[in-house]
Image (cartoon, rainbow, N blue to C red):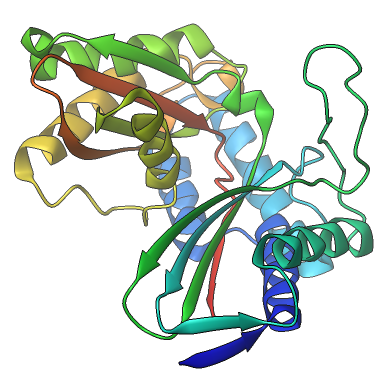
Length: 281
């Protein structure tokens, strides 16, 4: 049994949230550079140039990529041979988030009561935490500061099995079209198919973090990804919704087994930043 102190957890969470808010992954930067070459609209090219420059400045100066520094989401793989000592696991994570957002001067966006009082917690906590117990003696973190300009554009459909791949692709495309300029295109689209309604939403969000250029290992799902991306980019929405060829950088579909009577489909929309960072203790 390997012991991991809660201070180590707090420090790692803090480190990752600062990194995610300051630095775009190189695969996304490379995809933006490729998109700039593919874009034919002068306005679209101008928008992409500004996005790329913004990302470079944020990384160099260690300032937030976007004023919306997101709701703190974590996907954690907790090794079953790990013993957490000197405090609580959830408390350590939330303390790490709090310190990152306070010391990094990141906007705190969490309200405690979503309907009536909507009072800011002033710490960007509590975080949204998904934990899987896995073999081994390590803890793997994937943090995602999820902005709500894009999150608000997400959608869920409890589709019929008979709707098939065509129905899923059409739902993805229509969701992006309805979103228009609101999620700060070019977007990255995560799609979850199967499981239950809640599980589909979770795997859709996690799919956003897939590396650019990687497709689902199942060729049929990979084909759906490519078809949806092509149709979205033929919509003409373009960067910042000002017209052009590049509305979306990637469509990433993941799936789970589901019930014989249903086919849940979740579409999680994310802006071009797709902020996330990974680390291991």
